[in-house]
Amino acid sequence: MPPFPWTALQTHDGYEVSRQGGTIRLCLNRPEQGNALTLSMMQDITLLFKALSTDASVHRIIITGCGRYFCTGMQLKEDLFGSVSQRRTALQDLFSVIDTCPKTTIAVINGPAFGGGVGLATVCDVRLALSTSFFCLSEVKLGLCPAIISRFIVREWGTSLARMAMMTGRRVESQTLYGAGVLHALAPDIDSLEKITEEFLSAMRLAAPQASALCKMLVRETAWDGDTETTVGEVFAAMLAENSESSYGVAQFRKGTKAILWEDRDGNGCI
Image (cartoon, rainbow, N blue to C red; front, top):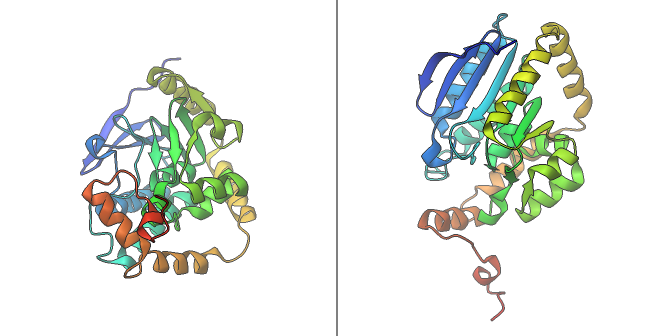
């Protein structure tokens, strides 16, 4: 049976929304900026997910990207320190609404993911990826840390792999995550990725939506252990405090510095 055609629904600043039967597809559309998330994008997508969560005609939501990248995280060219509270709230609301959405969420990972883009893929229920894609929690290189998304990374990746990726900023290949069960299918090219996506959608059409939502709730509630909200809040505040490492790191990033040698900055570099 051939796939249903996609029908365009909305075009926003930074993303597009289309529909195929009971499936909504959200495509990040800032290819020249690596599909980085602006504050307004995060707020708008949060509102979209809230609306879709109560729409009985919607059963599944796909998140993907246009162009080379899936998502390179938060837009660092914006004023990162202008409103810490506003930015933290936007990030938390976005990932929370996706995580608690009763619909089945599917990340179709069309290319590399960095920082918050890794979180955007990881928070989804099903993850399908190009075999050439990779994932990099690069925040630590700028004096930042993946505070908001850490709970999802640890939950889905496992403690050991998450710790290594978060503390080193090293890229993790899609094959590694597939072997760890984090990714559920790999495709050698975009055409194959679209075919695999359609195969998953066909299988999901046989799953009762309310039962799927209950399964999702069961897994989420049994996976959490302890109060993470307080810790995340403390880390986020410390990370963006005045004169923090991140103030220097992000400033260097905006200047075009490719790699920051932190030991040299602290006076401990080797000559």
